[in-house]
Length: 164
Image (cartoon, rainbow, N blue to C red):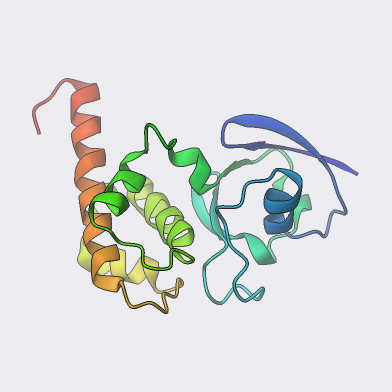
């Protein structure tokens, strides 16, 4: 069964069993390896992507539910040469140690900041409760998200022609 969806701005037609987890389609069929397989149960957040702007655990989301939807992975936030604000902030704060959880953290934070551009510390921490980091870089991750929030606000102000 062919399922049509948009991944990182490109229309895709996926011929897959409808019950296949979105994570497997992203990694195996589309070769987008940013989202990671962690627990396979939706309990660690390593597989987090955005669907229509909301954070979704792709390991427990059947691809059949993605028909006509917009999926964004960490690869869709920017490029190696031009990282997006979230990616740039994580680089500047050196927020990754092993890096396994980072794509999921970035995607959950991206979804939060798109929905709530002025998210405060409490909102950020609450949003990230779903995602686990075993390396203990939590404080750098939080700093990176605050930096990303500021970079996104600056970019928005520049687009709107106002000082920030």
